[in-house]
Every structure is written in structure tokens, then in C-alpha cells.
Length: 159
Image (tube, rainbow, N blue to C red; front, top):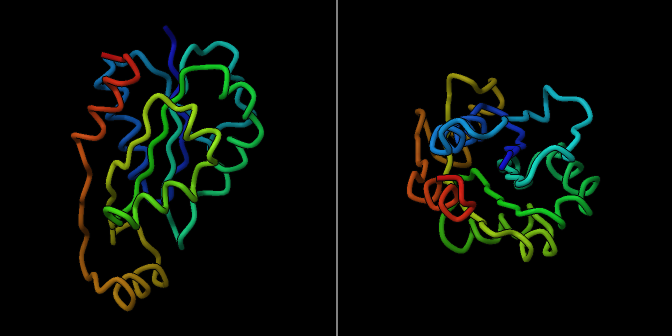
């Protein structure tokens, strides 16, 4: 079965998770970066995994538009959803529910919060300032959830 891992990334964490999923699936998945790809054709894929991240409280516009545009196809195939975010517990669940529409969440075989990263080296001055002022962070932090990534791969039947 052919799997597409469709994602958008701001600082690289969501892409890192997509690569981890692909590696756990023995490379049996194609990575599609919405920032670099034009119009995506899903016809040749049996399963779809979609990933995005939270910045300023919302998922990337590219991911939201992709989901809206391809809703019919996504609803007809096995679907996995993941969200890279630094929040945990209820806040993270609320961000997930805001990021992906209810019909997609209900249809998805697997919905995972894969943790997040703050990578100061990839941030501009304003982003660094906001992380220090609002988040109280002064250095890079990784809170990736490998257990959730492995569960997504397993639940999607990729291993």
C-alpha cells in the first residue's frame, strides 16, 4: 500500500516527525512538504497522514487549506493526523481539535499529539523575543513523543 505523509513545517519539527514516520514505515511512504509542493494529487495513494504544527495558536494555513480542498478524498481513505505542539494534556487536545475539523478527526484511524520543539537557532529575532517573554524559554528544547509517533505508525498499519 502506498502512503503519503503530507505536512507543513515552520522550523522543521513537523518535517522531522514525518521523516521519523517514514523511517519506521521502512521508507514505504512518500513525504510531501506543502511549502515546496504545488498541487498535490492524492489519487495514487492508499493511505494519507497529515501533519502540522501550532504557531501563534493556529495550524499552518497550508495544512488547513489542503484539508479543506481534499476533504472528499481524505474522507474516502485511511487517514492519520498528527500535530506537533509544545502544549500538553488538555491544552494540546484543544489545539488538536482547533487544528483539524471534526469530520477529519472522526474519520481518522489515528490522531496523535507528537510533542514539539523550540529551536532557537531557526527563529528570527521576534520569535526569540516572544518565546523568552511569553514562554519563559531561553534555549532550544525538544519534547518529541516517540511513543506517539510509533503508535501512529502501528495504528496506520505501516509496520
